[in-house]
Image (cartoon, rainbow, N blue to C red; front, side, top):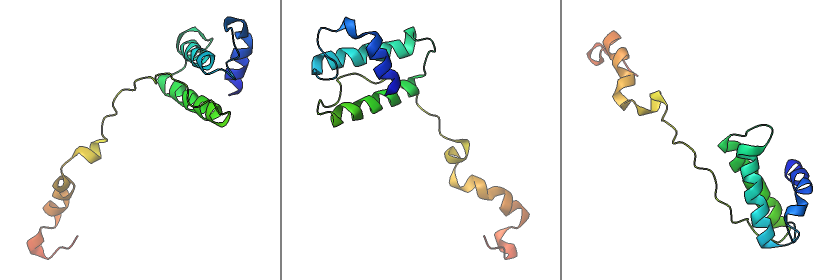
Amino acid sequence: MRMFLSWLADHAATYSTDPLTDRQARNWAVRDYRMWLLRDGPAKRSRVYVNSALTALDDFHVRRGLGKADVAREDLPKAHPAPWRSAPASAGCAPWRRICPPEAGASR
């Protein structure tokens, strides 16, 4: 929030109405801030960071009575499942069965 408010103070002349009280100005300011984080800021931010910042801004604006900003989130790549979760259930038992087969009276 501190970074957004600082950015907003630097860009206040861009908006004809106050982005902290007007919904339309708020939407434009949040969109501009999103693009600044992604491309124009001194440090390019990740899409995960930008989505987290937008969530914090939504919370701030909801608490001020303006509601959530109408700004799209960044699409994130689909996570690949962890290798141990994608293996069949019986794959983890195979080495144990070779060492101590069930007919030898082994228990799990």
